[in-house]
Amino acid sequence: MDDGLSRDAVRAFVAGHVAPHVGDWERAGTYPAELHARAGAAGLLAYGTESGPALPDRPVRARILIEELTRGGSQGLAMGLASHGVSLALVAQAGTAWAEDLVRAVLAGERTVALALTEPGAGSDLAALRARAEPRPDGRWSITGEKRFICNGARADALVVGARTGSGLGLFLVERPDPGLTAEAIEPSGWRCLPLAGLRFEAVRARAICGPEAAGRALQRAMTQERLNLAAMAITSAEAVRDAAARHAHARIVQGAPLAAMSHVRQDLAEVAIAVAVAAAFVAGTAASDGAARAAIAKNAAAAALDRAATAAVRLHGAAGCVVSSLVARTLRDAPLVAIGGGTTQVMNEIIARSLAKEVC
Image 1 (cartoon, rainbow, N blue to C red):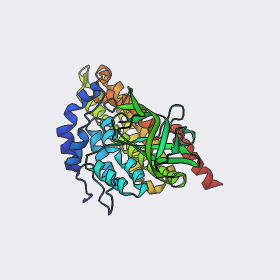
Image 2 (image 1 turned 45 degrees about the vertical axis):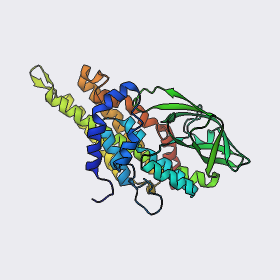
Image 3 (image 1 turned 180 degrees about the horizontal axis):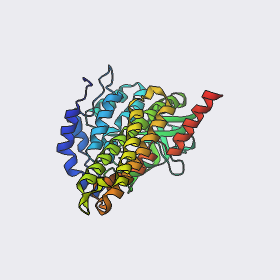
Image 4 (image 1 turned 120 degrees about the horizontal axis):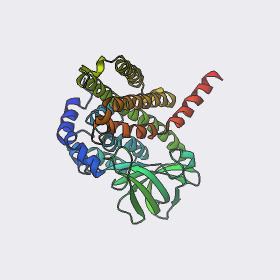
């Protein structure tokens, strides 16, 4: 398949620059910022080749990068290194030279960008966001407010920020350095190699990307794609721990026989295999163009399969599955963040329920 991004190339990058270091990065609470430049130089970030700005919004290419980074043992790194597509798709809404320059720089690994929507008390509810944007005399905007749980928020060169104007929610671009922008580190329970931050904006200078009408449509498309990205990550992780559990069940000898000789162990493995296979098939058959409800189903199904597979794998491994550095322990820690990211399970259920109401009423 000529998809513009070689899976072998990503696997080689992961084998050489990621997999050997995941344990160290998890303990340090961050992966090195220069990894973006290495990935850009290797051509891994610029996996969109359409005319105009090369946007990484092609689902096959995005999925390759997400899957291989996740398979390398780190959901956190996949979120940090492969999530730029969603942010850049929003930046491109500006349709300006500065937007095109930023897109090209991020895809080349020369700059980094992060999405700053979530707020204290509002979570992923865009209607509840309180950050404010006021126009400035120079044609720019001034943003005041707080954002929280922002991936790479403390070190990204640029931030795509959702903020309220007098006419509704708009999207804005904030670039470092700015004296009014401060950050504090947040230590997560999972995704430990991905630095999270709380951000405070005090009259921070910003460019307008798009106003309320365009912002709503753009955010809906972006969030739909982000949910599918998270679903792909969840399925890849679920498959990895499913396989780890099966290997352990056949290798671990108890009372002279492998664990897999026990009927209840085989039953557990079969139930996990069913859950993962069904969710994987649904995710593989879903595209952003299928709509928000189907993406929400894909995300919830994948997150549930991951939780089931990771829980079963840890229990089957026993004490070995409780070691912090083990794949199954790390995946069980990471699983709740996949379910929360891009909108919680309950938020996804509301989207699904609303779509059902429209179909039957």
